[in-house]
Image (cartoon, rainbow, N blue to C red):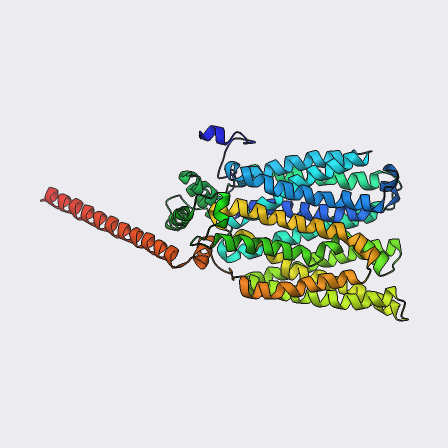
Length: 525
């Protein structure tokens, strides 16, 4: 297919190295900032609806809809996220990482406008779906871009950074909603709904500034552009030995992966030498475990949990929800210092273990409250504390690793498709949790928490026996981590061939130097 036809969806002219005015660390920081805005937006939308959906200002506009219908309006966002994540898998490899993110931002702006201007629940419903599609596109692409441009030694740190900004988005939404809850007009929910457009405009601007992924460029035979991006990211010349070495490693990986398959969907189900199928299911497992552990039952419905499960007043419940999400933001700085030191797997295991224990304890405490055993006041305090412990364990464990791990372990030729599928699994799991939590709390009460406790316990052996550690490895080295003997032998042959070529080139250079020296000597005498 003609290159110009492939890129019909380009949103602006192609500048693979991003802005020509910034290089080196500043270019990397711009990419990190783009990732941070993308994930802050995810957090903002997670905390947005839960803050005002029970308020009179919102419900009066839509004639006080049934709780089950409101729950669907909240949860349909996750369905849109799944559609967006799957949809971008079909075109993401054609248009690139930057333009996929830009496309998602434009779709989200349309959705935000529809929501903020809604007077009918149908319009709000449609706006939520469209915004979900946009965030699904952004959510599945941002981790790939960040992983593919970050240095291997600090890749985990940068992902932990944008998880912190995700929590900052949640905090912003909660406190904005809490402050506006005292405003007795529609602006109490219309303004925070429209405010997300500020994030989206920043994302659009940054997609012009940041570079395209050098690995995507190499995989699409844009080799000069790939070298230019690598040079720009390291603030070196294109012929610098380190730049050339990094580029050659990427090329070797592309060649090795090409020998295993063309990058089609069927490659996920083949028994290839790089364990692509296992790596896809591992990526899916991380995302599903993140949601079924119960985190969004707390984030989306923190105010509801504080009111219905623990028994706080509406204002106190709103205030405690704000404090809870603020604590989650503060705790998210802890993995900055742990993820590249201790690795991904220990943090996942530790986080899941604490989450399961907290949910088991929470079951007993909520039982005391709901059955009025005489210690319900003390139990309510304990239950509130458990929510803080749970969110702290989640942000140190599953949250900090749940986004970096899938983008690391997926092979380059299948990274966009695999990330889309794993992200879609995240959104579907999120939808299930958000949809069932309100009726579960209403109908089975304290038993809701034991379900999440059981899920977390079941995850532990899977992580222990199935997951591999990726700390400190380049994305190319991770391919070798999963490679079988045949694939490793192919890699050794390529390296030996490259060394032979280099030795041959050195010999040619030496002969040329001797001949030039000899000619100069004859000219003198």
